[in-house]
Image (cartoon, rainbow, N blue to C red; front, top):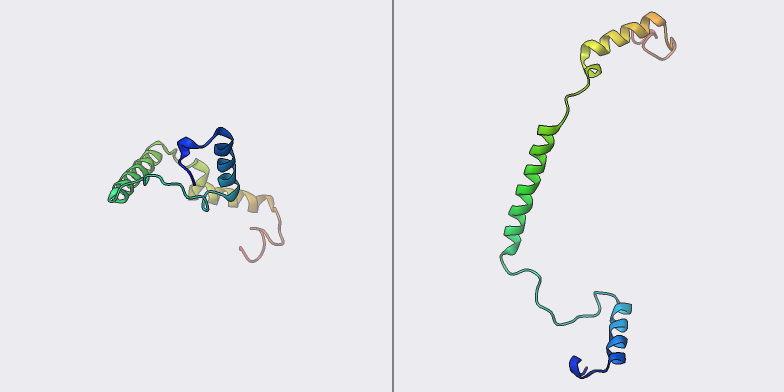
Length: 98
């Protein structure tokens, strides 16, 4: 608990290793706060704006759904499966689906 400038190099290394071995929560060094009072609202606004911009960009760049997702395509696929009599016990050709 001496002045840091008066310690020898070995004492500084020992102190640093001791603090690292305890973990960051147990070794408290005098330091300035990271953010100032009132910065949390500014950080929230910046995050909210960036999140909205990313969402808008993903919607703008997003691709259209494939043509196989349309109901017409699905109905034609189901009709083809019925014609081929695929999985007649539990599939679309069963009595439950008819």
